[in-house]
Image (cartoon, each protein chain N blue to C red):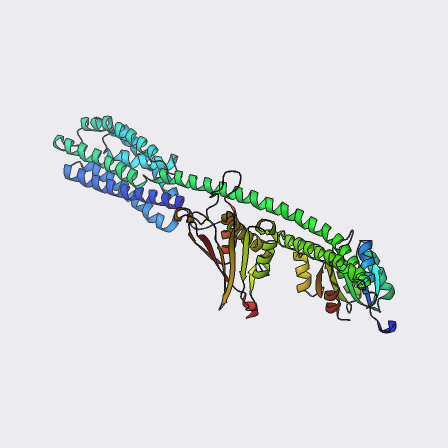
Length: 421
Length: 122
């Protein structure tokens, strides 16, 4: 899948880098302290461990595999630590705990995401520190006047390390939770969209089937009346009846063909779509809702070659949702104005209704999936979200302005096909 | 028009009524031959292939659909012009066929006398 490092990878890299830096500072710093304190034996051991880490560090530049190197370092540091305890009774610096605990973490808790695990293990290290140091002091390797300073420096060092690590990784848990929440929301939205798409698809299959079945009988009627009309032309009495049948067939044909456009179930994005035709089809489909309620004013541009490249079925769906929303915004009587204007390589479609309008607060949410002001069960809140998505998929831009109780205006900007220019 | 100069059109559809209506609608303009399936259509072409100038076929038919029929017919009779008359709308298949010039034009059911007459231009 994707090759670029994820946030998780970066976190791990950062963690191991910090381990390296703290390993350098602790071994070098404590070696210097023992040198000042006159405990040469410990100084040398500290420097040897430092060199060991330098080698790891240098290797890491070539291998980029910090993880593997730290696994190696754990093993060697652990072995060194156990040998020290065996021979000197734990006289080595308490900083050894720091050298051991983080690599232990690195070994057992590879993805360090939970700072609490880190804190608990560090606390264990601190507890283990005291008996070991006091055991070391009894061996008289460190001069008594340095013992207090040693204890303070060593323990504050461990504290600082724990504090730094905890601070730097403090938000990983919160981040993880947030990511989980986000993906849950996304999953919910995707599921709903899938259900909706599935619904539309099966509806489409059905509509296409119905269209086909109806088109044959329509063909019979149209063919039949076509022949009959030639015969009945002579009798003016019969003309209205012939016209009625013809009008009926034409209207039914228009409805069925509009239905066919909505049900075109293809994924191709290279169809030539005529936006005027699409809007007209939508108006046919919404005719039963618009009829006695809404006056439609069409102000189509007379420019030629207004094809948009995309998916015709989906554009139908997008425009239907928007016009349908405009219709629903109108309570009893109103107007929907549909205007198109071509400018350079763009086509602007403006759909203005005289409906109840959208409050400023809601305006920013209308493209959110599941946002609806309709009572539950009456709207999914997906219609406009789907429309916005489809228009954006076609490289279009959509903006909405609204004034409560005055109406809403949808502004859609499509890029025209260049094939005809 | 003198019958001897009239062109022949083959119409293929699985609905008998459609065949009847098509024949009656266009009988004054062309000699109309009909077939109720792709197989029959091919047979008609083999018998009078030389006279048939235009083939119009329904899309959805049992056994062999319109495009399959046209594809097979075009192999043996490439000089004939082929059209599809469909009640099923515009599908990707048909779009492809138009693009590759397998068919010259697409008509939708219910058919319009004028459109078909103009398009086939006989």
